[in-house]
Length: 505
Image (cartoon, rainbow, N blue to C red; front, side, top):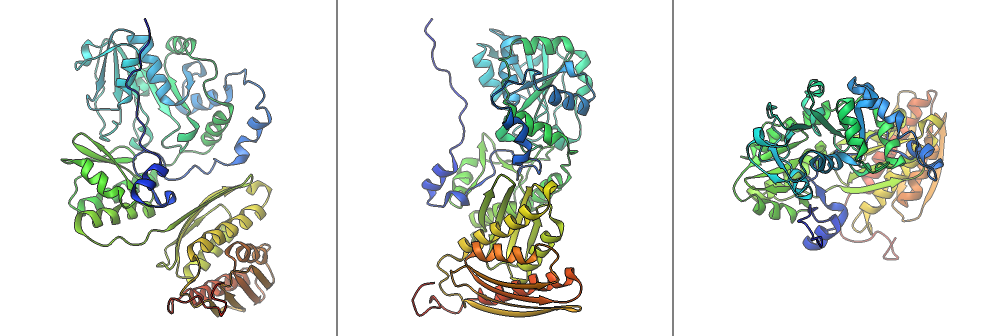
């Protein structure tokens, strides 16, 4: 028979398509429709791929034994009970074909992840309502899209428990493996590796052999396997995401919405005509997902979630939408850094790159500069702090340069003196558009002068800093505070002119 196309899984439109539709910059689009982590994991940096890249011309003939051993150790099962796949979706499709080709499939709950129905179509299987009569039963636990934790039924057919979100729930069904259940897990959610496409199945050795015998060889790439293995080296901690989920749920209730109690990294809000709200939020660059009977919202971090809440207030109550933070990203062979910056702001600052002392210094600069700054990232700290400190300041400078635009209406010049115990710092700044740095810091804790030089280069400012004292920590802190306060003065608005007789900077 000549094959015909099936109804395919439909991805939501890209940021570029949405941005063109609503007239926004693609970088300002915020996705709350993917149930993915707010940021990549700290382990996701080029160094994690170095060994795999060195051997990229070869196959991994051990079938990623190191990764399978790490997964087995995490779940306290044998390595012969672990099968790797390209996300848990590969297993959903594969298992439907193995156990229900031309048969029947049921899902628990009945309103659940749409991929089960697509898998049924690929296996020429019929979806039925009664799990007791089905050849294969998919239990989505916790459930997508509602976030609930359904009970596991006792069934005669092959039981497959999809635990993509189990890390957020704090419970699992691993005790069902010996009874013949197959457990599906993924690195796409709590581990923050959605783009890597790595999932795995846990089952008895006999079932695992059946599964792997029907897989294409090495459906996971060596690069993805390296990212997953590195991610497993750090104990998983989702407590901050769970706390943010509860905070967001509480804020949504104050807006008159009623999210369902969730065991996942998203919230489901029952409502009539959710698509109407989706369309209205999209005008603000906020993308959420509508289902029949409700709206699903992914939980991100506090800064992004607050933008979602601001957009909801604008849509539901007519409250003006505050200006969004600028978004910037810098990726090099040594570092990966993301920035969200609002100038002026309210001094809400969070910096976490792993370079503790200089994270603290940049926090001081941004706070005293009256900015909102959130910078997160990782670098090759095993080789020292040079790359991460240089790149964090260059990244901040690039974002600041973009935020200033043509610098119209800004005072342009700023000056500040700051004492820090025995230390004294003097900073003068000119938002000149020309990168000049004249820095004298004594004693320098190591990278302070170079940090300011990197900032001046990418922010395109003229910066003079003199700082002296006895304690290098005090000297550096005074200098960073002074630069921040000088910037705050230069960034004040005093009209609409470019402060230059040339008419431009």
